[in-house]
Amino acid sequence: MSSDQKKRIAEIRAQALDLTDTIKTLSELGEFRVRFLGRKSELTSILRSLKDLPEEERREVGKAANTLYREIEEALDFREKSLESMPSELTLDVTRPGIRPRIGAAHPTTKILESFEEVFTSMGFEVVEGPEVETDYYNFEALNIPKGHPARDMWDTFYLESPEAIQDKAQSSELRAQGEKERLLLRTHTSPVQVRVMEQRKPPIRIIVPGRVYRHENEDATHSAMFYQVEGLLVDEGITFAHLKATLMYAFRLILGEDRIFRFRPSFFPFTEPSAEVDVRCEYCEGTGCETCRGKGWLELLGAGMVHPNVLKKVGYDPDTVSGFAFGAGPDRIAMKKYGFTDIRMLYKNDLRFLSQFI
Ligand code: DAH
Image (cartoon, rainbow, N blue to C red; front, top):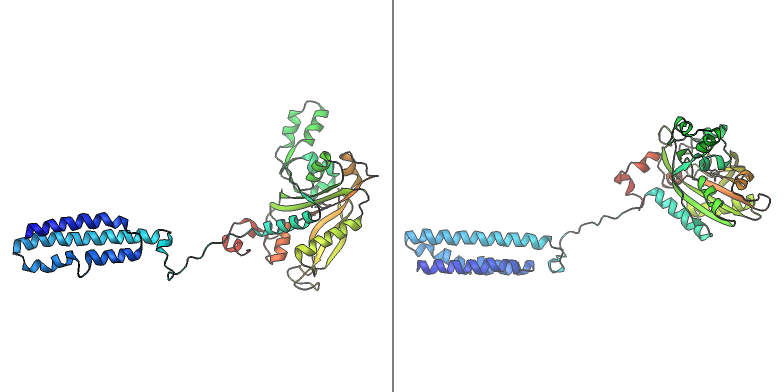
């Protein structure tokens, strides 16, 4: 009797443990559990009949049967866990609480840049990029900002080469002047790309240039040493300030909202004449002055103007036959206005609690 039962236990063991890996669903697993461990299972009846065995056999058979019971239980628990973690439709349990999918969100500046691209490409502008490491020539000189010109102070520049290094490299004064033009820096604005494109092509030109720019600034809520700009340039025959105004108003109503009110204010940039700054009326106070607009009633949006004849001449264009307009806008600041936050540094902190709001 006892050796019979030990043999049966060994057989049940082989059968049960071999089969656990073939279980495919949680309901199959339930049936299996009933079959091998349930009240009517063979193993249970062996355990139940232990009391009828002589003392010695009882201990032996009892130990083997209990061990097997635990082994099967463990194997089934293990299988259950692996079935639960298996992303199979076979294990789909519609009553389980769902897992909320994480949805990516575009960076607020990216969203503004995308709306610029959408609006301007719809008007026939092409999106062009240029290098972030520029030369003195493209960043300043070709834009009508010669060396020593006080307007250079408008841009606090990160130079990548010291003036001494440039002087040392050059033997003659001619080479020195050449070296100074080629002195490397981090571009302080996207305007140099205007020059690069005009050098390569003939009018008509219609481009926008999104990109990063760098300034040697103390960072605070409204200043960052690295930020974005979008440059615009249109050159053709007979372009006037009216084209500039109509294009910008059309574009910015689409980007910021149909009902926004804009104003053009005279300004100065070395590479445009005349120059203007465009403001948008503060939407919080509607022009009466509040904290957001620092009491001014207006928020600065961009710089713009008619391309200076000197800039056109530098790239070999004849200012008597072609003219153009240009503008430079700050998408970071536009994002701040559009989404209503007041610290530009939030854009560059990579704090997901902030960034994931802009879906
Ligand atoms: N480059 C200027 C800046 O960084 C912005 C600007 C003003 C660009 C007028 C232009 C322009 O193209 O016409 O401050």
